[in-house]
Length: 368
Image (cartoon, rainbow, N blue to C red; front, side, top):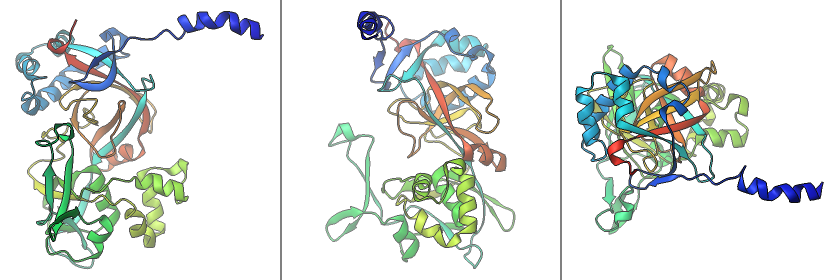
């Protein structure tokens, strides 16, 4: 048997494991890119291209300022046939990770609805804070161009810039530099608002306040789900937002201890519109993704192949990258925006599916 292996090994090396040639467009994506044809993408031609174009044109309001999309956004404005627009103006590439894999993790997010009050009382006692007056954000890009995507956040103590307060300290100690937008009645729902980055608050009088991400305390994001799984508070079978909520309903005394494992804390602003992504446009349910900008630029059309977390039916959609997230890191990594309300929460909270991502690069940016 050893002799058979020895005989066939060279053939295997030069055929079955033939090295695939990937293209690199470092100004667009740090990932390896496998050039494909549209007919190579499963179910591509079955999509609703009119809706996809509508979402892309919305993104163009902001992304056309980027040279990458300037010309193609002008084409989109007058496009009459959505299907032909995408096929004529873009070249699809499959994202490949550093290990040569073409599948990654697709999670989901949504816009939560909280119940609140403009004044604090025994029911509405958990504040949604604005950016602290004493927090300083340092942009290092002018001195270190390689760090243009990074920001230092902290506060002045004496003549030193020190890290801003952790979640535990912000919740425990009085801080005169903090101003609440309003107060809500559920601490865990407020934590989910921090994770999602935007949401709605329904006040006692029925009015709705839209709140959106304004800033963050600069502390590292740590996954509460992974922490609870490691500690045995939840199991792999109920490792979801719903499973976490069920645990806290039974063990409310553990809430602060567990949530404070994540030192990151998000600050908000009142917004005129609903969930708005990092691109600056209102998000479209089931048509926008949060991505890692190192691999997928904001405004980029992205064809996603994954599965519904509950029904397990295939999801094959042409979407637009319009948001980012602290936990969204990696070549083949995205967060699927499910929309607003309880139904969206049901899907988003359970979503952790395998998926493949194809980015559509404008043909005028492709070197033949």
